[in-house]
Length: 511
Image (cartoon, rainbow, N blue to C red; front, top):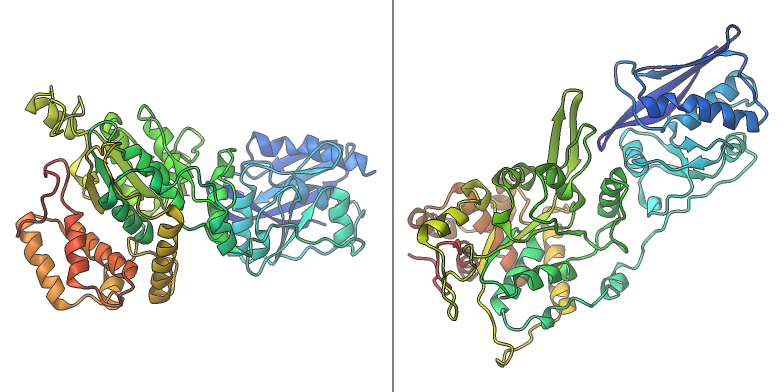
């Protein structure tokens, strides 16, 4: 007799069904695991044997064969301990349970039979729902809004005895996930140490950041040192709505793969890697590929300060995830895919000394040095930014309005995103919606398309830039609570598409 129990295997963030087949025979004592297991999987025999002995089931004098199917797929991680232990108990007649194919077991065992969590547990929970499992047994230490995963009953267990007792109907288990119900209350309870009124002036920049937050657009800032680029970027997360339960689970899944701590209270992540970071640190990689900063910023913000100081190779590796929202890492053993749907905010000085075109400081850089410095950023990468801003310093003694608070801006952003969800019947924002959907549902008139085409010919804008301008105009109209994209919204969108590397402050679109 062979006992078959379902579990889940992971390859990066993608998962697949594993059938754990257990056969206990009389013969020379042995415990063999086959099916291309890695070291963490092979070490399950010691963990399982010790846990079973504490439960009074000793198979040390028997031949145990464990097959992990599909046999051609490499297995990694201690995900299958519970399934192996239950299979042996079933083979030995210690339990009388029929294991349904729609029930899966994921978790690692301690030597005393206690269930412990493993890295990548949350991704396996999300995969279980996608694979059609109806019940999932996991360690009880996971505290997340798991109650909101549809069509999946999750049973947290602390000990192998608890799992056996529940399967035999002797113990009742209930889910312990944290379900966040009052999103509106949480929006206003976020930390307020970073607030937009702390930044004097820069009203146009604040307006651009509100547009970027509302539509999910990428933002490029340039200006002399101390003009406020970093201050503005650090306050950008305060005007982003809290993550939905599904977004939060996806984001935390990535953090679990790297064994790092995610942001609290469903706050969108804000990642700011140093410019000395390698391309592996930024987009992920390694012999055993792990997520990088781009994936850790999933559903949040990736802020690259001193942009030209990054190597050109590192920056160009962001071009694919900026378009697809995913990072593909290929190795000899296969390709791993990690999510990377983030907003990119970058900041840079206009030249090596930082004072090119500054009003009160003299630039010491030669034209060749300036051109070489700016050429560190490739044209294809610049082409992927939606909004360009050129900032100038604001005097601390100048009488300028403090403008809207972060909460006031956030409320406008939430309303604009609600309009987008109702329009597209999805969670997609204007920045990621397809051009066909934008033409169909975006309410852009043929006259406005002709106007954009005329400007694009004179400005030599690529097709990608023209689509970005239309998406930007749609976001501006949403912020203005307008169903139709107006010419004023289109004009404003075009003024954000001049590169500050070549245009002076205050110069608009040339017609």
